[in-house]
Length: 178
Image 1 (cartoon, rainbow, N blue to C red):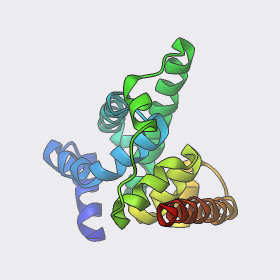
Image 2: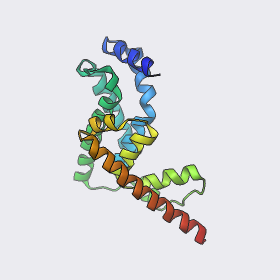
Image 3: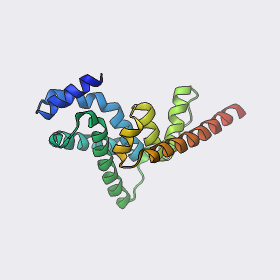
């Protein structure tokens, strides 16, 4: 898998559009999760992903080491997300989807409970836990993507896990009280 990723990155850097498309499609889930974790709005998240993919295609020659493609792409995406978020906060509107999500009933299936609990955490926790557990990025890769030290990533993961556990157990207790 890793060798195939490196091969596709090298082809994409040489201008192969099909290889780039395959690369992006292989990262589609991760990109969507990161964007939704930051923006909380499907339309804004889709815009951020689209903008990030375009910038990545136009800047493939700037990628120095093919093995860091995922990290590089996440960093581009995060920049796009924060830009969209800052524009949105200037307009200070609250999308209807966010209001509806806040009042949604929890689903008792464990996988959905985990997802609901993760979404209830702060965006920073969602992102770091998502990158580590869902997307399988290493502490080193997360540190590079976020521009922080590996120790900071470990500390944020530890704190995020604690907050996740507390939120999950709280939801479980509420479930058993009913």
